[in-house]
Length: 555
Image 1 (tube, helix red, strand yellow):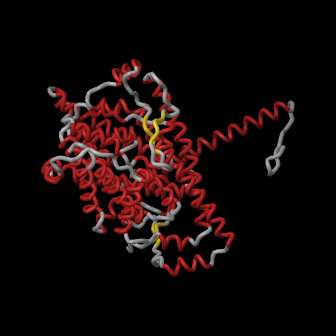
Image 2 (spheres, one colour):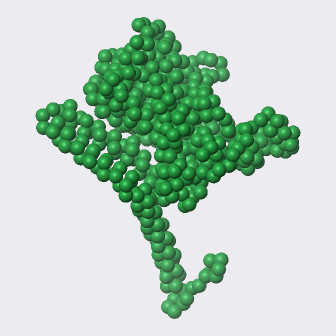
Image 3 (cartoon, rainbow, N blue to C red):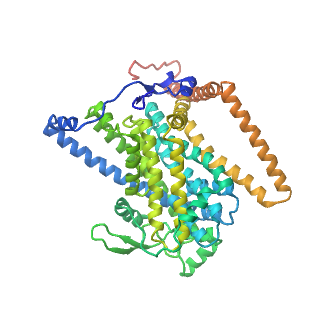
């Protein structure tokens, strides 16, 4: 199949057999490349009124995009406040690589930022509180945890089943790549330690302390966020190094410390100066409960704002797509996949977050402006871009270990790309996994929520709990060993079910039945309510009075 084929949802026609063949959701449409002549022809054929509407739509696009980034950053800050103490405590005393991987996933989900998780790991390694062999799996886990953000963003298109299927596939291709990379590279790292050895040889003996590098987009978005909520990441690092939030807030009450929300210098992008600002949610001498309440309110506001901005973004983009030839748009986005990786790197360097890059692209996949095959290289570029940002930041720190950890993060993604992208057969594996997940959302609309909870919370917690049994010694090791045997047998049974017993068909049918049962219950409830209303109207009209409605529903 040509890599230039258009990704079109075919709805219920998709079958597990088609998914296995890599054919689901695809229509063989070859697309010619976009040329300068196409651009010039399009400009010449545009009227003045169309130009004015185009300018207005562009303004709306920039407006909604800016506040989408604002609320996304605010949501991240809210999660840091709400989950800071718990996330920090998870890093304390880590020595098991598997536990490190699970902590990396869970902590990143809690704080909604792989950069925060990575910075905590850097500080722990620099303080000799965590060894590099344990830190590397934590970095890998952070890579998986950060992909949950754009998966959540895909829910913005849940009302349109076709768009939701494509958007969820576009979001989870990030998950598939990260999980496959970890499954491939973690065992190799645990046995042969190539990342540790290579980065140890590459790290400098000494680096100069300097100013942290900040991307241009961050300079325009972060100042407004910090005037609303300024999360104190130092608390998370302190807890990770053995401190506790009770002692920290005792210092806050005494006026000698800072809690999870702090005042600080805020950059002014207009004149380049910094001003000391206390955010709107800051309270002097705040208790932990005060900051938790502030974080909860800020999270609620950020979620509402994200939904509004995402809706505005999607509607504006739909308007722009309708005003432009769909074929022309697809040809404009039809670029070499390796160039798409470079574009993903560049965009992520600008916004300093792979979550932001993939979250902005996810609605475009849902609208079928970008197909799944184009989303994958852009996602891979975003993965590299976020590690390049950390690498630039580490080069102006005062600890060589921070450079080593940043290099581990960088080369982990590079090796993952080399394994899963250049060879078409290998590239199809994460794409097929993402298409399957998207197809399952059509079978049951509750599936995406269950997927997120299971993959990013339940399974990591189970494996984290099991790994801690081996660290406890004695009888706990025996219990842990028995649990591992149970997990292996269960996994083998699941694989056998799906591969040899047509499990995909059975599973999809179950999801479909559950969705039909849910729809039936909802429909019955609506009919019962309508019947109750009708009975009450009959009773109000007196005995023997029959109340009828015409075709338009009027009495």
